[in-house]
Image (cartoon, rainbow, N blue to C red; front, side):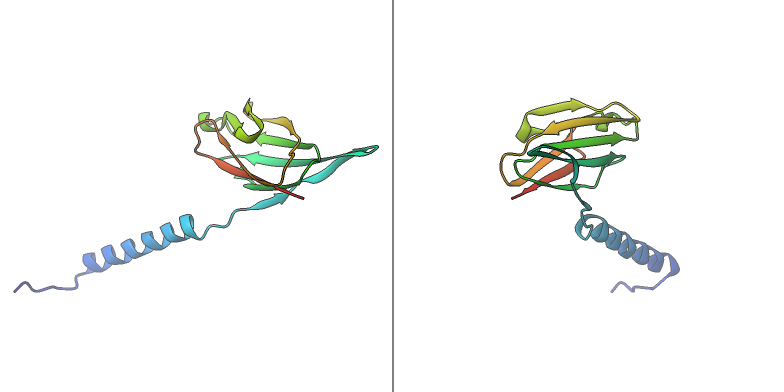
Amino acid sequence: MIAFAWTADRIAAIALGAAFLAFLYVFFFRARRREGTAVPAASTGDLEEQEATITVSGGYDPEVVIAKKGVPLTLVFDRRESSPCSDEVVLPEFGIRQALAAHAKTRIRVVPQRAGEFPFACGMNMLHGLLRVED
């Protein structure tokens, strides 16, 4: 029969393993997506417009943009890094693949014609965001 002894190194290994598992759970499964609502940008007669600024720095902030259906929307991508992953954004629903200049703002104008959720991502599909269009 093999005897098991609670030594300091075994206790430390178990504690570190448990802390790492807790970190993984919180980071991947409990993280909440930050949401932002597109705000009215201008009103020209019968046509109103909305605008949302998305900061690009290791991800998209906010990750979810809420907009109104049928109202022109300008997405302002404020890229604050030079990582090759974030050098372009792809909005497949709107047929857009746009380069984003490092440390600059890029404006993309779309008109969401139907309600729903439309994902967007970086060119490498590592950074993800969502455009939620409501009636």
